[in-house]
Image 1: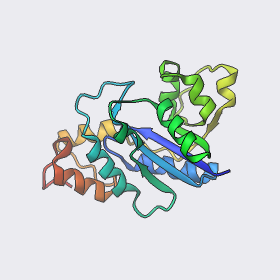
Image 2: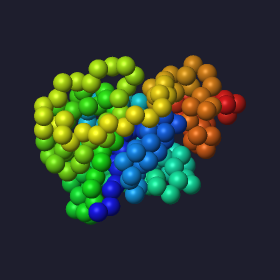
Image 3: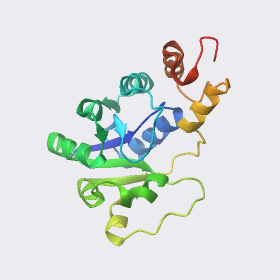
Amino acid sequence: MRRIGVFGGTFDPVHNGHLIMAQEAVARLKLDRMLFVAANRPSHKRAPQLADVEHRMAMLRLATRGNRHFEVSRLEADRGGLSYTVNTLESLHRSTRAALFFLMGQDSLEEFGGWRDPERIVELARLAVVPRGDRDMPSLPPLLRRRIVYVKPPRIGICSTEIRRRLKRGLPVRYWTPDLVLSYMTRHGLYGTRKRRR
């Protein structure tokens, strides 16, 4: 059976930490491919300044170009409205008949009980969890613990929030995100970028 990773998120913007996490999951879990699924509108967090999903999809395509294991999915963008992981996994389960691994950070695991239908999510996919620094893992029920596999990539302290913050303050983000993504952000004036900023 094929093994497919599913990496959901806002990717606002995608950065090198995302790519390193995804590549590590492909290698350690022996995945045939990793699907990057940009949320149309995240259901679990407020994102009033969220870049349009078409911009975020375009940046994902640029960032993943050239990696034969990476693929960008339009599933949530085309569905529209609020994005729910359980709906995405149901669609993938029906269309792929593959073993699914949902890639998430430890912070998402800590909030997982508040997601829509978490029991169904772990029926549809194993959770591939990336620990965050030295934080202790949350206490989990046995059923959930059996459905988790841990992926420990090298520690990279990059996050989308900090990239947006730095761009608004006029600070450089080169090497935080792929050059093609940075060029796209600048060309489209995303996150307060200007032509001169590198």
